[in-house]
Image 1: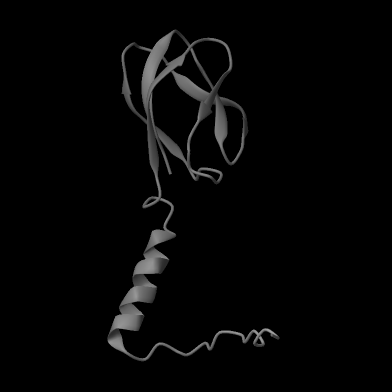
Image 2 (image 1 turned 30 degrees about the vertical axis):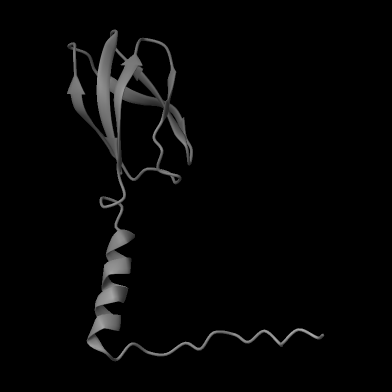
Length: 99
């Protein structure tokens, strides 16, 4: 039996209120700060450490939300869709918020 032809979906302009609100909500989900990930208990030292940020895309930015010692933390290498290379001025355990 032959298969029915595949038809392209019909695209309409959203005119009713629920469709407009749905599209607005979906657009807000693309906001980088809405889609964020906090990685807790990351141990950093004076050498390079790969930190998996779990975003599935290159982060817009990051923020240290907690640390257990006095140390400076910085990005020390390339950033990819799944990790960031980081380093600290001293041994420290941090929580990092990526967005």
